[in-house]
Image (cartoon, rainbow, N blue to C red):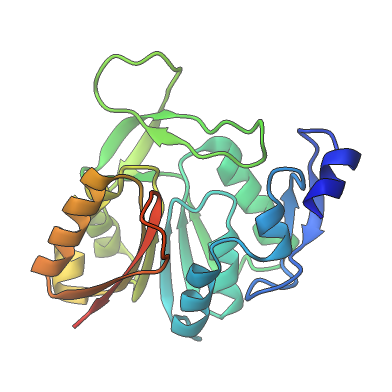
Length: 238
């Protein structure tokens, strides 16, 4: 499939495609078949898909932190969970909104056009690179940087949950800012104790995230067998 897409499609061509296998079978997305084949064929982060399929039920509340174009948000909504999808990047948020409507899941998904961080307010974001399909935006530290950035609103999970329904499951994929997301979720993880799937991007984040969750009496399991990064961590309250 991937070889054929290289031959037939331009490098930046987008097509509306239906997921062919896995828990997401049948969902429709606008994808670049050349670069986003795992999403199209259903093999994308399959262990994460399976955990969400098992965990989420009618009435579940799912926070998708770093929703990107919405694969997990739509998967959760089709499980009849109520979804809050956090996506600060303009292009990704617009793609997410199109996918919600394309799959008729608007009643189950609320799109929050903001980043999640350790403090609420505003932060600098390096927009996603869409040259190979749906790219990932990056939070930029308060230092000099060479790439253009945009100013976006941000919230902590504690601040957001104070005004909204508390989640029972959270997925975090924020391209290296995962430690900062947890720093803003002290009350949520102490009192509400949601399940967590967290993509960890480097050893420094791994060290912080593991220690932070263990102190709060969470059991941890890596969902992938490789030792390199990024890796998917599953955390369940004891």
